[in-house]
Each structure stands twice: as structure tokens, then as C-alpha cells.
Length: 519
Image (spheres, rainbow, N blue to C red):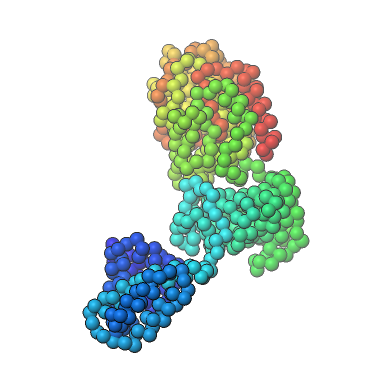
């Protein structure tokens, strides 16, 4: 072990009595797990002038001291006796080498006993106030150091990457999306300095409070989300009731409280004391990590897809049903995670859009060999773009399908027919921005069709498709890493058959009913 490593660096703090509680706990853990460190610690204590006075103890005194140390370390009286005995013995002197060595061993034992005693008598000034229920590719720091525990004490935290699901008292569930900076003040209070969070508060958790630089939000049993950026805070209520107090720079409430109910939202500016009503953002916040079973999913499965990618929130996982066709989420530079709220609930694959998401790939895709084909998917476009990929497996002379935006930003569906030629159809209208759209492309050996929100957009003649059994399928990107989608992709299903017009209409109807229940 490097002599300059942290445990050795705080030996002096321990001896001088200025060691902090956190340092003491770290030293304790290190001593328990490293025999070499224990020897070095003993030697350090022996070399210290204060510890060297312990050499005056008689051998009988050392036997007594060791006996006390080996008694129950959780016993306040035993530990106190040990400390008292060591103090008294400092006034005796032998000078023997054996006594000098035993002194170091006793002192090393003392720190282990003292630390355990410290914990047993409740000298913990940072009570545990929340629990990490789940995390996705997260990096959480506390006071600048990486935090790896499942329990969160009172303190200042920064979520630098990924997603966190926290549980507070009363069953309050809080979902935090990086980047975010927050303080846990108690089991019922959290301060969000920057970033986004969503909270689900059952009746037992009524009164849970989130403070921001511009507002204090008190819950009365609800589901709400908060977005804090420089100089402003937004509060969005999806169900129930919250009370919002505007705050000034000193932290005082400066305006009459505003009650927000289901489907209401406000923005509070640092320059204004009055909350301003805004549109509810149903697509911005991650309000659950789970991918619940929904009617739309059942409707898709009834049509027997060869692979169904629901885009659930998983750490680098592009999960398929069935699982053998799963892939991976590609990540790169960006601020927010490669996941975002899906079309219904749960997650979606987020590409670009200020995120680390750079698409996905499946290296073991399902075989597409019948000559017929369908693809159904939901897409959400953040900005007007072109040459952007939704899904495809075309590369050189290989592969047999692709769905993308062309150079004009119009939808483009392409297939490779059995004779090796490519056939395409293009929509005549642009996709709407920041709106979920349901897209379906089908090829039945005679025609290639493209549907948008249940309506047939365009059609062309097309022969049977070429077979494809192993070519990589890309979502939201091309093999070269270009053609990135700018938005989200969700509920993508591949079929080795052609869906009928009726199938497409029924899928879209199921989607509409699902949206009505979940927005």
C-alpha cells in the first residue's frame, strides 16, 4: 500500500485529537480490512511521543488493559474504564521494549473499540433521511466525494450522471435526473438547488416539502415535478394538490401562497414574486423507472412481433421481448441521461436533445426472412432536422429496411427487395415538433406503405423483401455514428409479416386510449 494513501495521511490527526468523525470512520474501515495498515498504525503510535509514555505500564497492567479492550466494545462502562486505565498508566515507567510494543497494540485496539462505542451511544450528527431504491448509471457525490451507500444522511449532494430513485418517510418517492444539486435536510424536506425531480406522495407523506431558490413547495398528497434552472423554478402538478410559496434571496416567503391542482403548472422567476401560470409539461419529467403493463403493449403482442423494444429505463440496456434480441444504448457527451419519459409512462430512448444518448444497436437482431415486413414505433422530434435515423439495418449491399428523415426533413421509408433494389416512399408533410407521433411502415410483397397516427400517408409498388438474418439493427443513429435522431424513440416493434390497415388503425386507437389515461 502506498505510504501516502489517505488512511496513513490521517494518523497524525488521530494522535493529535483533531480527527473528524468521517475521517475516524474511514480509518476504522481501513484498519479492519488491511493487516499491513494495522502494523503501520501500531508502529506510528509507538513512535509518537505521547504513546511512548505507555511503555511505563507493567506487564500486569497491560494484561488488565487488554482484557478491558476485548470485553464488549458496545459497553460504555468498559470503554470508559479502558480510557481511564490508559490515562493513569501514562505516569508509570518501565522502558522495556516489550512494554513499548504492547502499548502500540493496545492503542490500535483502542481506536476500534472507541469507534464502535461512538456509534453505539448515538453520536451520529448526520441522521439517515432517505434510501436509494434504484439508480441508473448514476454518479452521486456528497460534499464533493463519491457516495456509494444506499442510505442518504443529511447533507449536500450532486447527481452528476444518471438517474436516482429515492424514498423518504411516509413512502414518499422522489425521482432525480442528472445533472442536479440537492440537499437532504430531513425525512420530510429536500432542497433542490438545480435540476429536475418528480415526487409521488401518498397520504402518509402529506407535508413533504421541496425548497428551491425561488419557491417552497408543500405537498398535500399528490404527484408533482419541479424543474430548477438559473433564476427560475417550475412546478407541475399531475395529480392532487400542492401549495407554492414564492421566496426571496434571503429565503423568506414574499407572496401569498398559490394552490396548484391536477394539470396545473407555474413558473416563478427570481425577479418576480408572483407565480405565472404555464402549460403542464407532460413529456419532460421521468416520473417512474418502471415500464408498466399497458393496453397498447398488449395490442402489439397480439400481433406477434418478432421483437418488441419498449425502451424501459435500464443501465445501458436496450431490452427486447424476447430477450435474445436485446442490444445496448450508446452514450457520449451530454448533460442528461439517454432516457426520458416515454409516450405513456416509464422510459424512452433519448438521442441528442442535450443528453448523453447517441442511439442504440442490436447485434443479434431477429431474422426477417418471410419477404413481408412491418415496423411500428413512436417518435418525438425536438428540433427540425434532416437525414435523421429512426431505425434501420441497411449497410452497403446488406440489410432490408430503414425508417428516417430525408434531407428535407420528410419521413422516408426504405426497403430492399428480393432483387437487391431499394424502394422508398416519402411523406409529403413534416413531423410536428415536441409531439409524440405513431408511425408504421409495412411491406406485403406488393406495396410499401407508410402510416402516421393511423392514417395512410404514402404508398408505392414493392416486391418481396430480401431476407436478412444477422445484420445489425440501429436505432436513432447510423453505423457511422451520424444521422442522429434529435428527440426520443419508444415502443418499437418489428414484425416478419405485413400488418393490415385494420391492424394499424387498432394499434393507433389503443395508443390514443393509453395516452388519455396517462397524460
